[in-house]
Structures are given as C-alpha cells and as structure tokens.
Length: 452
Image (cartoon, rainbow, N blue to C red; front, side, top):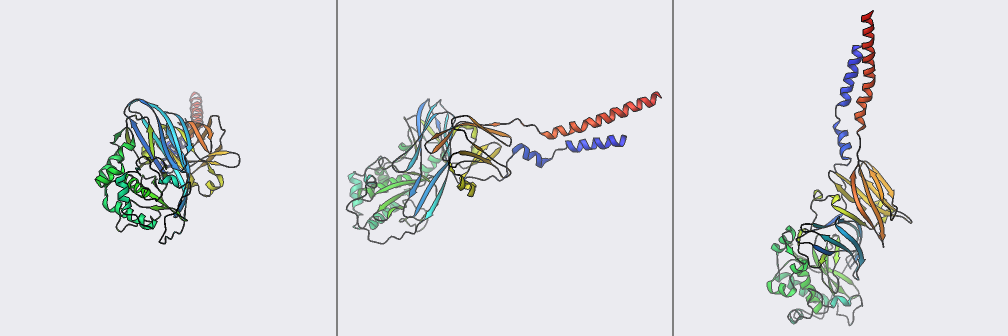
C-alpha cells in the first residue's frame, strides 16, 4: 500500500512539472516565423493642437505603362480608433482615395497602416528615334500638359530654360531635359532625413516641398521636388508628364509617347552610369499617380491643423499594435486566387505577443474572413450589417462589416483575449481523487486493525 501511494505521488509530481514546448504553444498560439504580407505602407502623424481634419491617403488600383502593368489589391487598411467616419472614392487617374474624418485632442495620433499586394507583368519596350511631337493628344492625356499645384508650366523662366533643350524629336527632348535636371541638382539628404525622422512640424506637408522655381535657384532637391521640376519643364515643351510615387516614397516621372503610351523616366539616380530613360523596371508597389490638375503628396489633410510627421515608414512590426485601430478596410480577393497563393493575399494581425495572418475573400455570393498560422486555419462567412465574432486560438475578433462599393469596412474592430483554462491543471486534481481515497481506505483499515 505504501509503495502504491508513493507511485501515485511521483506521478502527480511528473504531471505538475511544466512542459515548456506545450506551454509556449498554449500561451502564444503562433509560429515563431510568421508569414509577412507583401508591402506595408505606414503613415503616422501627431496632432499639436485640438481640432478636426479630413485626412486623405491615396493608392492606385491599376497602373499601366510600356514597361509594366500593375494591378493592386488593397489587402487591408487599418485606421486609427479615433476616426469618426471613412469615405473612399476614385479619381480620374486611377487612385483610390481614403478620406477619414478625425476629431482629436492635442497629442493624439492619426495612423493609417495599409497592406497591398500587386501583380506585375513585364513588357518588352524598344524605343527607336525619332518620335515626332504629335499634332494632337488624346483627351485623357491632355490634362498632363496643364499647370498644377507645384507645376508652374506658364512660368517664363522655366519655359525659356526648357525650350533651350527642346528638339524636334520627343525622345531627344526628354533625354536633354532629364540630363540637365539630374546633372545640376544636388541630393538634399538633410531634408529627407528631417522628413523621415519625425521632427518636421508643418500645417501642410506640401509646404515642405519646394516649388520648381526654388529648386532651380538652389540646385538642391530630393526626388519628389526633382520630379515636379522635371514634369514642369517637360510639360512646358509639350511632353505629357505625370509623377509616380512608390510605397517607399520614391518618386519618379512618366512621360507619354504617341503609339507607345506611358514610359517610366528617372529624375534621381544615385548609382553610377544611371539610365534615365526609359527607366529600368523596378518591382515596387505603387502608392500614388499624381493627379493631373494638382500635384499632391500621397497624403495630406485639411484644414491646416498643426501636426508632426511621426513616421512615414513601417520598419518594424513591433511598432504596430492592432488594438490602436478601430476600423479595417479591405478589397476581398477572389477565393480561388487566395487559395492558390495565400501568402501574397493575406496581411498580419499583430497584438503583442500574438501574430496571425488574415484575409478577406469573396465568391459569387459570400465574403469570408480567413485566419491562420502555421498550425491552424479557420474561416467564417461574414454577415454584413451585423456584429460578427470569430474565435481563433486564445483570442476573439469582433467587428461589424459594411460593404462600400467593392470594399468591405470592418467597423468597431477589436481583438480580445479569451479567458482560457489550461486543462492540464485539472489532471493533478483528477489524479488526486483516487490517491486520497486509497490513503483514506488505508488509514481506515489501519485503525480497524489497531482496534482488533
């Protein structure tokens, strides 16, 4: 009997000893090597006074030129929890604009975190001289000859300068102007450093960007300013030009050629022997094609509330916490496409210390939310207009999905820890019952023997 009791006691000790691998899986429920979606775009501003603003963020839906064709899917846009309302619309160029209304106190943050995925197709492009200037331009190209904000096409100083480089051949004209801009302009690293470090206080980000006349006078610029300068000169001599900004905030230009279309051209080359035109294809995610009538930064706000640019890039996932956001926008991808390549069409949900992948897909009738890690997958068909909940591992998602055009907005988005009980703690209790009964029976029998 004593040996039996000792064996049970040792078994209880073994059951109560922690199993580190199991505990880690139970506590975190995620892989140590999570998958990462293709491209994050992150803007974070801090307000320096109370007020209300409309914040605008842009990303192209499609982008076609003679080098590549890019179709962009907005996998997710996470919007700060202090947003009051969200509106989306398309402009004439092809950008999808996100307009968010905020009312805030001094020191509040406005954050937009966007994950996008795209498919890029190469096209062979051979430019053969000469390409004469056309007698007329297509209606959808004409706006890119007009003046715009920061594009003073009618300025006589810039016009005289540009005409000195003009030729009968469009390609030769483009090469002459780009060579002049690139050879005379110094790279303003201090300005870029100020912009990216978050120490910039401004009422409007465009106030930070020099007018092409200032760029011409100072011979000092960064890529966005240089693109505006080149676009102004090229439009002045009849070359339709637009700017193109990538997710990394790199900006270059595109020029239009008859019977060819839009062609990438470089305005800021830091590598030896750069090829300015046509620009070699870079597999980058589009962020914004410049509005033809008004050159804008990829984001802006109105009215002019004083703000600090806190972050323009997303360098570390540890800087992101999903619980700081109150709404998620997504353009659901085709379910078959997602199943073929889930890594390319999903985005991370991070709430320390957990991290999983999520995706919205659609078929002919339903919108489905997918949640996964390397160990488990789950999906749920959403009910539009009503609060939906989905449990996965040790957390639960809650939101109200609303359809707005081809976009689904998950309002009142929240992630909550589920109160989960480790069933292992019940094993010692269950095992203790027979041990207690055996010990009680042993004591009772011993008392009876003593009496006898």
